[in-house]
Length: 451
Ligand SMILES: C[S@@+](CC[C@H](N)C(=O)[O-])C[C@H]1O[C@@H](n2cnc3c(N)ncnc32)[C@H](O)[C@@H]1O
Image 1 (spheres, rainbow, N blue to C red):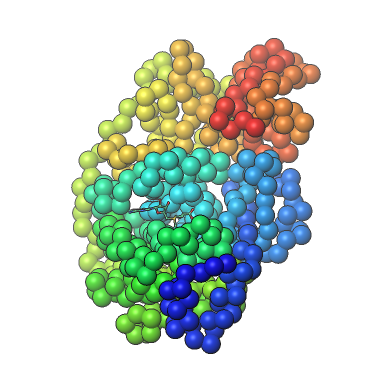
Image 2 (image 1 turned 180 degrees about the vertical axis):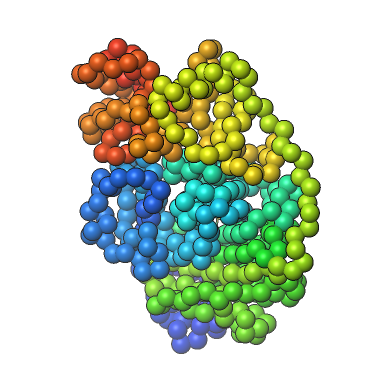
């Protein structure tokens, strides 16, 4: 791979005798990996993945290898394709069930899907992305993952901050960066490299982190990560955080085999910086990453921030009875949450969420369905978030029927059953809601997802 002259000069100086081994990795293939979704039930249809491929020692849901995006495991949200080093970020975040967590730069959703599993769908995850198109992709991935407590917002960090002052227990800033660690995975990134690019990225990161800190509770945890080797970002940003915010302290991050400490000499020699972790491709099987973890002083206690009670639309009498009829007929057990309407759509919002009425959101929670003339139609996201054990009205379909269904076809069944909504289940995977009329299961698979 042809690397820019300036890049070679810079890292020859920084890495000294290690530089040749570092540069040699740019001619090796990049590593691929995937994580499994611990919130989804049943045996993976592609269990051989788990048996044949190497486990990643620092992520117990992570494996080396490539997955096919067209398999049932993938389309029903059992697997997420993620570069192995990136998996350590979700581990370091270490989100806990019941917490309020913010993933501030979240698209396409690798870290958010990991955080959802760590939280076991309990608490509140706000997954934010500044760019609209990327926020939509993020939302699709969150939906596929079957998240029930996750909100997807589409704001710049400074616009999000006033709505969530001192609100979060944990914030991840997986920052937009110069991306040097991904050059061999995405070689087109090299064309943006200039001697000044890392400094430009660092300035942007400072603004993002300043907004993040407005949203962090006293005693809360901030995780800053990048996929670049550039010390102008990485250690120098961590050093900037420590000097700018006297109430922040670094938390040591465990170093597994092949992981390196942060390099204080690449910033202001503050020995604290060695608590960060660097992942170098010449030391482990993954791409380049940097992660630093901080805790905000718990003293003083959080200010009493008065947030106006959310003013959301709820269902009217007719809608309430349509929705209750659906729950009774299907025997569906819903996760806990607040039932809120946006337009004709019904959503389940995580309990305790600040008003997001004024925030630009893509997904205000789990979409349950839509009210159409005198009927309630369940959403695809509800199917993906429903465990087959939590619903009585379900119909098992075969692999072959699944293939027909995801192509947009109807399915004919042999037995006689009541007319109405059923969750289609294939090999333990929740596939879709379908309406049975006579012996025909009508196709409600979203057109945009059909293959
Ligand atoms: C490293 S990527 C995030 C990857 C994501 N966390 C994941 O694991 O899938 C950084 C994200 O920051 C977003 N971004 C770019 N400029 C930004 C800004 N000024 N403020 C906040 N986010 C920004 C990018 O659109 C991108 O989605």
